[in-house]
Amino acid sequence: MQYVRAPMTAALNIYDPSAKPQAGPTSLVGLTRPQMLDAMKSAGVEDRKAKMRAEQVWRWVHHHGVTDFEAMTNIAKGQRSVLAEQYTLARPDIVERLVSVDGTRKYLIRLAPGVECETVFIPDVGRSGALCVSSQVGCTLNCTFCHTGTQKLVRNLTAQEIAAQVIIARDDLSEWPTSNENRQITNIVFMGMGEPLYNLDAVSDSIDIMSDGDGMAIGRRRMTVSTSGVVPKIIELGKRTRAMLAISLHATNDGLRNELVPLNKKYPIAELMDAIRAYPGLNNSNRVTFEYVMLKGVNDSPAEARALVSLLRGVPSKINLIPFNPWPDSPYECSDWETIETFAEIVNRAGYASPIRTPRGRDIFAACGQLKSESERMRASARKAT
Ligand code: SAH
Ligand code: SF4
Image 1 (cartoon, protein in one colour):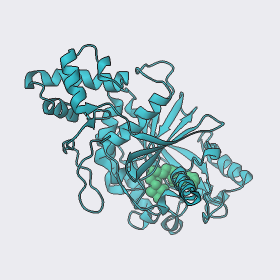
Image 2 (cartoon, protein in one colour):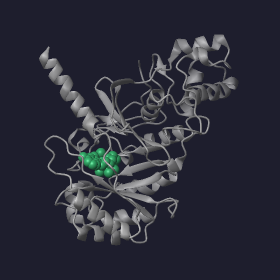
Image 3 (cartoon, helix red, strand yellow):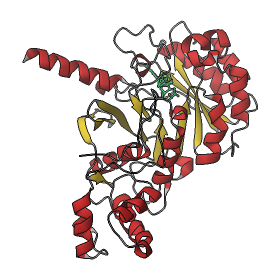
Protein backbone atom coordinates (compact mmCIF):
# COMPACT_ATOMS: atom_id res chain seq x y z
CA MET A 1 0.00 0.00 0.00
CA GLN A 2 1.14 3.54 -0.60
CA TYR A 3 0.89 6.28 1.96
CA VAL A 4 0.37 9.93 1.12
CA ARG A 5 3.78 11.32 1.76
CA ALA A 6 4.92 14.83 1.04
CA PRO A 7 7.96 15.05 -1.24
CA MET A 8 11.10 15.20 0.83
CA THR A 9 13.65 17.87 0.16
CA ALA A 10 17.33 17.95 1.12
CA ALA A 11 18.94 15.79 3.75
CA LEU A 12 16.50 16.62 6.54
CA ASN A 13 13.41 15.60 4.60
CA ILE A 14 11.45 18.76 5.14
CA TYR A 15 7.75 18.01 5.38
CA ASP A 16 5.68 20.03 2.93
CA PRO A 17 2.09 20.26 4.24
CA SER A 18 0.77 21.52 0.88
CA ALA A 19 2.09 18.50 -1.03
CA LYS A 20 -0.46 16.48 -3.04
CA PRO A 21 -0.82 12.74 -2.60
CA GLN A 22 1.42 10.65 -4.86
CA ALA A 23 -0.02 8.83 -7.86
CA GLY A 24 -1.46 5.33 -7.31
CA PRO A 25 -3.88 4.03 -4.71
CA THR A 26 -3.24 6.06 -1.59
CA SER A 27 -4.83 5.68 1.80
CA LEU A 28 -7.31 8.26 3.04
CA VAL A 29 -6.59 7.30 6.64
CA GLY A 30 -5.01 10.12 8.66
CA LEU A 31 -5.39 12.87 6.07
CA THR A 32 -5.90 16.48 7.11
CA ARG A 33 -9.24 18.03 6.09
CA PRO A 34 -7.65 20.03 3.23
CA GLN A 35 -5.90 16.87 1.96
CA MET A 36 -9.24 15.02 2.07
CA LEU A 37 -10.87 17.76 0.02
CA ASP A 38 -8.06 17.51 -2.56
CA ALA A 39 -8.49 13.74 -2.62
CA MET A 40 -12.23 14.10 -3.36
CA LYS A 41 -11.55 16.55 -6.18
CA SER A 42 -8.89 14.25 -7.64
CA ALA A 43 -11.46 11.43 -7.56
CA GLY A 44 -13.68 13.55 -9.80
CA VAL A 45 -16.26 14.68 -7.22
CA GLU A 46 -17.90 17.86 -8.59
CA ASP A 47 -16.58 21.03 -6.98
CA ARG A 48 -19.93 21.97 -5.42
CA LYS A 49 -20.23 18.55 -3.73
CA ALA A 50 -16.58 18.04 -2.87
CA LYS A 51 -16.64 19.88 0.47
CA MET A 52 -19.59 17.92 1.83
CA ARG A 53 -18.23 14.61 0.52
CA ALA A 54 -14.84 15.32 2.11
CA GLU A 55 -16.53 16.01 5.44
CA GLN A 56 -18.54 12.79 5.23
CA VAL A 57 -15.56 10.61 4.35
CA TRP A 58 -13.36 12.36 6.92
CA ARG A 59 -15.90 11.50 9.63
CA TRP A 60 -16.25 7.87 8.51
CA VAL A 61 -12.51 7.46 8.67
CA HIS A 62 -11.68 9.40 11.83
CA HIS A 63 -14.82 9.06 13.94
CA HIS A 64 -16.04 5.60 12.91
CA GLY A 65 -12.66 4.12 11.97
CA VAL A 66 -14.17 2.23 9.00
CA THR A 67 -11.92 0.00 6.94
CA ASP A 68 -14.32 -0.53 4.04
CA PHE A 69 -15.87 2.07 1.72
CA GLU A 70 -19.09 -0.01 1.74
CA ALA A 71 -19.65 1.05 5.37
CA MET A 72 -20.07 4.69 4.29
CA THR A 73 -23.83 4.42 4.11
CA ASN A 74 -24.63 8.09 3.54
CA ILE A 75 -22.59 8.06 0.33
CA ALA A 76 -24.20 6.73 -2.87
CA LYS A 77 -23.08 3.25 -3.92
CA GLY A 78 -21.63 4.47 -7.22
CA GLN A 79 -19.63 7.13 -5.49
CA ARG A 80 -18.30 4.58 -2.97
CA SER A 81 -17.00 2.36 -5.76
CA VAL A 82 -15.32 5.32 -7.44
CA LEU A 83 -13.54 6.09 -4.19
CA ALA A 84 -12.63 2.44 -3.65
CA GLU A 85 -11.07 2.30 -7.12
CA GLN A 86 -8.80 5.21 -6.41
CA TYR A 87 -8.09 5.03 -2.70
CA THR A 88 -7.69 2.62 0.17
CA LEU A 89 -8.52 2.78 3.88
CA ALA A 90 -5.38 0.85 4.74
CA ARG A 91 -3.28 1.43 7.82
CA PRO A 92 0.50 1.06 7.89
CA ASP A 93 1.63 -2.48 8.79
CA ILE A 94 2.37 -3.51 12.35
CA VAL A 95 5.73 -5.28 12.30
CA GLU A 96 5.73 -6.17 16.01
CA ARG A 97 3.07 -5.94 18.66
CA LEU A 98 4.11 -6.55 22.24
CA VAL A 99 1.84 -6.52 25.27
CA SER A 100 3.50 -6.15 28.66
CA VAL A 101 2.35 -7.81 31.87
CA ASP A 102 1.48 -4.31 33.16
CA GLY A 103 -0.84 -3.63 30.19
CA THR A 104 1.62 -1.49 28.22
CA ARG A 105 1.34 -2.18 24.50
CA LYS A 106 4.14 -1.45 22.12
CA TYR A 107 3.91 -1.38 18.36
CA LEU A 108 6.64 -1.26 15.77
CA ILE A 109 5.00 0.22 12.69
CA ARG A 110 6.28 0.06 9.11
CA LEU A 111 5.42 3.27 7.30
CA ALA A 112 7.37 2.45 4.16
CA PRO A 113 10.12 -0.01 3.30
CA GLY A 114 12.94 0.61 5.78
CA VAL A 115 10.97 3.28 7.63
CA GLU A 116 9.76 1.98 10.99
CA CYS A 117 8.65 3.83 14.08
CA GLU A 118 7.54 2.97 17.58
CA THR A 119 4.28 3.74 19.32
CA VAL A 120 3.53 2.80 22.94
CA PHE A 121 0.19 2.66 24.77
CA ILE A 122 0.59 3.24 28.49
CA PRO A 123 -2.54 2.58 30.58
CA ASP A 124 -3.34 4.54 33.74
CA VAL A 125 -1.78 7.87 32.93
CA GLY A 126 -4.09 10.81 33.44
CA ARG A 127 -7.75 9.76 33.54
CA SER A 128 -7.14 6.62 31.61
CA GLY A 129 -4.26 6.06 29.21
CA ALA A 130 -1.65 7.77 27.10
CA LEU A 131 -0.42 6.93 23.66
CA CYS A 132 3.20 7.81 23.10
CA VAL A 133 3.79 8.65 19.43
CA SER A 134 6.90 9.16 17.32
CA SER A 135 7.47 12.25 15.20
CA GLN A 136 10.63 11.14 13.39
CA VAL A 137 12.37 7.88 12.60
CA GLY A 138 15.66 8.26 14.45
CA CYS A 139 16.85 11.65 15.71
CA THR A 140 19.52 14.17 14.77
CA LEU A 141 20.23 15.01 18.40
CA ASN A 142 22.50 12.76 20.37
CA CYS A 143 21.42 12.82 23.98
CA THR A 144 23.90 10.46 25.58
CA PHE A 145 21.37 8.47 27.65
CA CYS A 146 18.88 7.96 24.80
CA HIS A 147 18.86 4.98 22.53
CA THR A 148 17.09 6.79 19.70
CA GLY A 149 19.99 9.25 19.80
CA THR A 150 22.29 6.46 18.65
CA GLN A 151 20.13 5.90 15.54
CA LYS A 152 20.62 8.10 12.49
CA LEU A 153 17.67 10.20 11.40
CA VAL A 154 15.89 8.29 8.66
CA ARG A 155 13.28 10.96 8.06
CA ASN A 156 10.54 13.14 9.45
CA LEU A 157 7.10 11.58 9.67
CA THR A 158 4.17 13.19 7.91
CA ALA A 159 1.03 14.29 9.76
CA GLN A 160 -0.72 11.30 8.24
CA GLU A 161 1.89 8.93 9.62
CA ILE A 162 1.64 10.46 13.09
CA ALA A 163 -2.18 10.28 13.07
CA ALA A 164 -2.02 6.70 11.74
CA GLN A 165 -0.19 5.65 14.92
CA VAL A 166 -3.25 6.65 16.95
CA ILE A 167 -5.60 4.99 14.49
CA ILE A 168 -3.66 1.72 14.67
CA ALA A 169 -3.73 1.78 18.48
CA ARG A 170 -7.46 2.50 18.45
CA ASP A 171 -8.01 -0.43 16.08
CA ASP A 172 -6.09 -2.65 18.46
CA LEU A 173 -8.00 -1.42 21.52
CA SER A 174 -11.39 -1.52 19.70
CA GLU A 175 -11.99 2.19 20.34
CA TRP A 176 -14.27 2.94 17.38
CA PRO A 177 -16.46 4.90 16.99
CA THR A 178 -15.08 7.78 19.02
CA SER A 179 -16.88 8.03 22.33
CA ASN A 180 -16.36 10.26 25.31
CA GLU A 181 -16.95 7.51 27.82
CA ASN A 182 -14.69 4.64 28.76
CA ARG A 183 -11.94 5.65 26.43
CA GLN A 184 -8.62 3.95 26.88
CA ILE A 185 -6.59 6.44 24.86
CA THR A 186 -7.38 9.76 26.52
CA ASN A 187 -4.00 11.46 26.14
CA ILE A 188 -1.34 11.74 23.48
CA VAL A 189 2.30 12.34 24.33
CA PHE A 190 4.95 13.12 21.72
CA MET A 191 7.62 11.22 23.61
CA GLY A 192 8.42 8.44 21.15
CA MET A 193 11.23 8.61 18.63
CA GLY A 194 12.49 11.94 17.39
CA GLU A 195 12.43 15.63 18.21
CA PRO A 196 8.91 16.98 17.52
CA LEU A 197 10.06 20.60 17.21
CA TYR A 198 12.27 19.66 14.26
CA ASN A 199 9.11 18.52 12.52
CA LEU A 200 6.66 21.13 13.76
CA ASP A 201 4.54 21.48 10.59
CA ALA A 202 3.66 17.80 10.60
CA VAL A 203 3.24 17.68 14.40
CA SER A 204 0.91 20.67 14.27
CA ASP A 205 -1.19 19.21 11.42
CA SER A 206 -1.39 15.87 13.23
CA ILE A 207 -2.66 17.63 16.37
CA ASP A 208 -5.36 19.28 14.21
CA ILE A 209 -6.38 15.83 12.94
CA MET A 210 -6.39 14.14 16.35
CA SER A 211 -8.19 16.95 18.19
CA ASP A 212 -10.96 17.49 15.63
CA GLY A 213 -14.39 17.03 17.27
CA ASP A 214 -15.71 15.20 14.19
CA GLY A 215 -12.88 12.70 14.41
CA MET A 216 -10.87 11.34 17.29
CA ALA A 217 -11.77 14.34 19.46
CA ILE A 218 -8.78 14.20 21.79
CA GLY A 219 -8.60 17.61 23.50
CA ARG A 220 -5.58 19.79 22.76
CA ARG A 221 -4.86 20.08 26.48
CA ARG A 222 -4.65 16.29 26.56
CA MET A 223 -1.73 16.35 24.16
CA THR A 224 1.79 16.90 25.39
CA VAL A 225 4.72 17.68 23.14
CA SER A 226 8.12 16.90 24.63
CA THR A 227 11.21 18.73 23.44
CA SER A 228 14.87 18.53 24.31
CA GLY A 229 14.85 22.35 24.11
CA VAL A 230 14.55 23.72 20.57
CA VAL A 231 14.15 27.24 21.94
CA PRO A 232 13.16 29.15 18.75
CA LYS A 233 10.19 26.80 18.17
CA ILE A 234 8.72 26.63 21.67
CA ILE A 235 6.41 29.64 21.54
CA GLU A 236 5.39 28.80 17.98
CA LEU A 237 4.41 25.32 19.19
CA GLY A 238 2.07 26.84 21.77
CA LYS A 239 0.54 29.34 19.37
CA ARG A 240 -0.07 26.80 16.63
CA THR A 241 -1.20 23.79 18.65
CA ARG A 242 -2.31 24.92 22.12
CA ALA A 243 -0.84 21.61 23.29
CA MET A 244 0.84 21.10 26.65
CA LEU A 245 4.60 21.47 26.83
CA ALA A 246 7.14 19.04 28.27
CA ILE A 247 10.84 19.80 28.54
CA SER A 248 13.54 17.15 28.76
CA LEU A 249 15.67 18.99 31.29
CA HIS A 250 17.79 16.28 32.99
CA ALA A 251 20.31 18.75 34.44
CA THR A 252 20.18 22.14 36.13
CA ASN A 253 23.56 23.56 35.06
CA ASP A 254 24.88 24.13 31.56
CA GLY A 255 28.07 22.10 32.11
CA LEU A 256 26.21 18.85 32.77
CA ARG A 257 23.32 19.56 30.40
CA ASN A 258 25.80 20.22 27.55
CA GLU A 259 27.01 16.67 28.11
CA LEU A 260 23.64 14.93 28.45
CA VAL A 261 21.63 16.98 25.94
CA PRO A 262 24.21 18.41 23.49
CA LEU A 263 21.57 20.78 22.03
CA ASN A 264 22.07 22.76 25.24
CA LYS A 265 25.32 24.15 23.77
CA LYS A 266 23.18 25.93 21.20
CA TYR A 267 20.31 26.87 23.53
CA PRO A 268 21.53 27.10 27.13
CA ILE A 269 19.28 26.74 30.18
CA ALA A 270 18.67 30.49 30.75
CA GLU A 271 17.35 30.92 27.17
CA LEU A 272 15.30 27.76 27.51
CA MET A 273 13.69 29.00 30.74
CA ASP A 274 12.84 32.36 29.11
CA ALA A 275 11.06 30.60 26.24
CA ILE A 276 9.18 28.36 28.68
CA ARG A 277 8.00 31.34 30.75
CA ALA A 278 6.59 32.86 27.56
CA TYR A 279 4.72 29.67 26.54
CA PRO A 280 1.15 30.64 25.61
CA GLY A 281 -1.60 29.60 28.03
CA LEU A 282 0.69 28.64 30.89
CA ASN A 283 -1.01 28.77 34.30
CA ASN A 284 -1.54 26.67 37.39
CA SER A 285 -3.96 24.33 35.68
CA ASN A 286 -1.86 24.14 32.50
CA ARG A 287 1.66 23.46 33.69
CA VAL A 288 4.89 22.65 31.91
CA THR A 289 6.19 19.14 32.61
CA PHE A 290 9.90 18.88 33.31
CA GLU A 291 11.33 15.46 32.60
CA TYR A 292 14.39 14.46 34.57
CA VAL A 293 15.97 11.08 33.90
CA MET A 294 17.64 9.65 37.00
CA LEU A 295 21.25 8.70 36.18
CA LYS A 296 23.29 7.09 38.93
CA GLY A 297 26.01 9.39 40.25
CA VAL A 298 25.48 11.85 37.39
CA ASN A 299 22.50 14.12 38.18
CA ASP A 300 20.83 12.51 41.19
CA SER A 301 22.27 14.22 44.32
CA PRO A 302 20.16 16.10 46.90
CA ALA A 303 21.99 19.30 45.91
CA GLU A 304 20.77 18.80 42.33
CA ALA A 305 17.22 18.25 43.58
CA ARG A 306 17.40 21.59 45.39
CA ALA A 307 18.89 23.26 42.31
CA LEU A 308 15.96 21.89 40.28
CA VAL A 309 13.43 23.33 42.71
CA SER A 310 15.03 26.77 42.62
CA LEU A 311 15.40 26.75 38.83
CA LEU A 312 11.66 26.13 38.44
CA ARG A 313 10.55 28.69 41.01
CA GLY A 314 7.81 30.89 39.58
CA VAL A 315 7.15 28.62 36.56
CA PRO A 316 3.86 26.66 36.75
CA SER A 317 5.43 23.23 36.51
CA LYS A 318 5.16 19.50 37.10
CA ILE A 319 8.20 17.32 37.55
CA ASN A 320 8.53 13.82 36.16
CA LEU A 321 11.45 11.87 37.56
CA ILE A 322 12.11 9.08 35.06
CA PRO A 323 14.12 6.08 36.22
CA PHE A 324 16.76 5.58 33.51
CA ASN A 325 15.84 2.68 31.28
CA PRO A 326 19.12 1.00 30.34
CA TRP A 327 19.85 -0.33 26.87
CA PRO A 328 22.68 -2.61 25.72
CA ASP A 329 26.05 -0.84 26.21
CA SER A 330 24.40 2.31 27.56
CA PRO A 331 26.98 4.48 29.34
CA TYR A 332 24.78 5.03 32.44
CA GLU A 333 22.99 3.14 35.17
CA CYS A 334 19.68 3.97 36.78
CA SER A 335 19.94 5.66 40.18
CA ASP A 336 19.26 3.47 43.22
CA TRP A 337 15.68 3.48 44.42
CA GLU A 338 16.67 5.13 47.70
CA THR A 339 18.45 7.93 45.87
CA ILE A 340 15.41 8.50 43.69
CA GLU A 341 13.19 8.61 46.78
CA THR A 342 15.44 11.14 48.52
CA PHE A 343 15.45 13.27 45.38
CA ALA A 344 11.67 12.96 45.08
CA GLU A 345 11.17 13.93 48.71
CA ILE A 346 13.03 17.22 48.22
CA VAL A 347 10.95 17.92 45.14
CA ASN A 348 7.77 16.88 47.01
CA ARG A 349 8.48 19.19 49.90
CA ALA A 350 8.69 22.03 47.40
CA GLY A 351 5.07 21.28 46.45
CA TYR A 352 5.34 18.91 43.48
CA ALA A 353 3.12 15.83 43.95
CA SER A 354 4.21 12.20 43.25
CA PRO A 355 6.76 12.98 40.59
CA ILE A 356 8.28 9.51 39.99
CA ARG A 357 7.17 8.00 36.74
CA THR A 358 7.03 4.26 37.32
CA PRO A 359 8.91 2.28 34.71
CA ARG A 360 6.40 0.71 32.36
CA GLY A 361 6.71 -2.16 29.97
CA ARG A 362 10.31 -2.97 30.82
CA ASP A 363 9.70 -6.56 29.68
CA ILE A 364 8.91 -5.30 26.17
CA PHE A 365 11.81 -2.84 25.74
CA ALA A 366 9.55 0.17 26.23
CA ALA A 367 12.40 2.70 26.46
CA CYS A 368 12.56 5.21 23.67
CA GLY A 369 14.02 3.67 20.51
CA GLN A 370 14.64 0.28 22.03
CA LEU A 371 12.03 -1.94 20.42
CA LYS A 372 13.17 -0.95 16.95
CA SER A 373 16.77 -1.93 17.61
CA GLU A 374 15.82 -5.08 19.48
CA SER A 375 13.50 -6.11 16.68
CA GLU A 376 16.15 -5.37 14.01
CA ARG A 377 18.69 -7.36 16.01
CA MET A 378 16.33 -10.33 16.26
CA ARG A 379 15.44 -10.16 12.58
CA ALA A 380 19.13 -9.97 11.68
CA SER A 381 19.93 -13.05 13.76
CA ALA A 382 16.92 -14.84 12.28
CA ARG A 383 18.29 -14.05 8.81
CA LYS A 384 21.72 -15.36 9.82
CA ALA A 385 20.13 -18.52 11.15
CA THR A 386 18.45 -19.36 7.83
N1 SAH B 1 12.98 14.25 21.58
C1 SAH B 1 12.02 14.61 22.55
C2 SAH B 1 10.90 13.59 22.73
C3 SAH B 1 11.28 12.14 22.70
S1 SAH B 1 12.22 11.51 24.05
C4 SAH B 1 12.70 14.89 23.86
O1 SAH B 1 13.89 14.60 24.00
O2 SAH B 1 12.03 15.43 24.74
C5 SAH B 1 10.98 11.34 25.33
C6 SAH B 1 11.57 11.31 26.75
O3 SAH B 1 12.22 10.06 27.01
C7 SAH B 1 12.60 12.40 26.98
O4 SAH B 1 12.39 13.07 28.19
C8 SAH B 1 13.87 11.60 27.01
O5 SAH B 1 14.83 12.32 27.71
C9 SAH B 1 13.45 10.32 27.68
N2 SAH B 1 14.37 9.20 27.50
C10 SAH B 1 15.12 8.91 26.42
N3 SAH B 1 15.86 7.79 26.63
C11 SAH B 1 15.57 7.36 27.88
C12 SAH B 1 16.01 6.25 28.67
N4 SAH B 1 16.88 5.35 28.19
N5 SAH B 1 15.48 6.12 29.91
C13 SAH B 1 14.57 6.99 30.37
N6 SAH B 1 14.13 8.05 29.68
C14 SAH B 1 14.61 8.25 28.44
FE1 SF4 C 1 16.41 12.79 20.32
FE2 SF4 C 1 14.81 13.16 22.47
FE3 SF4 C 1 16.43 11.01 22.29
FE4 SF4 C 1 17.48 13.43 22.68
S1 SF4 C 1 16.11 12.31 24.09
S2 SF4 C 1 18.24 11.88 21.23
S3 SF4 C 1 16.12 14.69 21.45
S4 SF4 C 1 14.70 11.46 20.95
